[in-house]
Amino acid sequence: MSLNQGRPYPIFVSNNIKSMPMKDFWNDRYSQEQMIYGAEPNVFFREQLQQLRPGMLLLPAEGEGRNAVYAALKGWQVTAFDFSEAGYKKAMALAEQRGVTINYQVTDAAQYTCAPDSLDAVALIYVHFPPALRQQLHQQVIKWLKPGGSLILEAFHPKQLNYHSGGPKDEGMLYTAKTLQADFASLIIQQLEEVEIQLNEGAYHNGAGCVTRMVAQRKTAD
Image 1 (cartoon, one colour):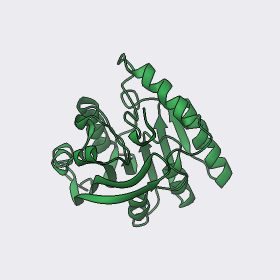
Image 2: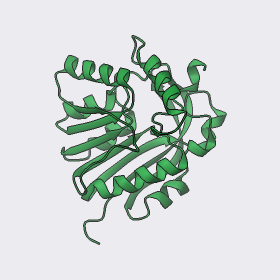
Image 3: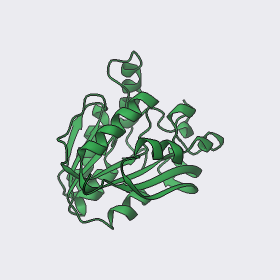
C-alpha cells in the first residue's frame, strides 16, 4: 500500500475475517515513530469545537489521539476508542506529553457501547466504514447524544477517488451529503457541505482533496 493511500479501514468489525489483517496493518502503521496524521487537530473539528461549551465528548476511531488531546486541552472530558493498540499507545503518550487525561479504549465500533443521552458532542473525523457498520454506528451516535448535543463530522467524498491525498479506495465507504442526510434525518442539520479542501495532516492526508462536512444537533424534545 503506497503512502498516499491513507487510512482505508479505520475500524473493522471484529468478527469479520478481514479484521485481524487490517488490525495488524494499522498497528504496524501506528508503530512508526512519526505521527502519521500529524499531532495537531483536524482544522474543521477545531473550528467547530471552539463554538461549543466543553462537556462530554466521544471520538470514535481516534487513532493516534490528536483530536482527543486537543479537546482535553480545551477542557472537554474526552472518551475515545480505536481497535489499534499501537494507536492507543501513541495517543496516551501524546496526552502525557501535553499534560492532559483522556479515556481511551481499545475496542471496535461493533462492540463499543455508551449510555443513552450522555454525550454533549460526538466527532466523527475521517471515520470510514462499510455501509452496514456505518449505519449502525450513526444510529447509536444519535441515541448517545444528549438532547441538544452536537455532532461534528468530516469524511471523504466519493470524488476523493480522483485525488491522491488519502482516504479509502472503496466508494462504498465514502460519504455524500445525501448519505448523511439519510443517516441523521432525526437531527437538526446546521451545516452540510461537499467541498474541496487542502489537507495538511501529516504524510497520509496531504494535498488537495474532496470532503463532506456536517454539523448537526439532536433535538431538545421529540
